[in-house]
Amino acid sequence: MTTPRRQWTDETIREVLLPIASELGRMPTRGELTAHGVGGLWSALGRRGGVDAWREVVASHLSAEPIVEPLAVDEEHVRVAAYFMFQNGHPGGPDSHWLAAQRELATA
Image (cartoon, rainbow, N blue to C red; front, side, top):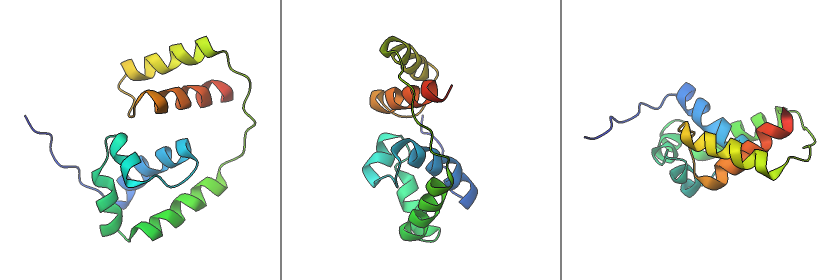
């Protein structure tokens, strides 16, 4: 069974791209988008204004985010949170789950 192709609009691009960029702290590369399971997004960026234009959107988004000093987080709590992200189908791999769990626990 094949999955249907995603229809990329400016809104769906923002919904997918900006959280990944926030996680990385910068514009993701084509390979990083593929690793997050959205490899087709790179081509969509090109079709919907160009990668450079979206890079500016990401930069604007990142500069608007408040800077929060991370708290020291217990490694066991991060491990458990990352595991549940994996179990719940959170996009990305083990490294992105770990970083997302750290960030989530540090701001909680």
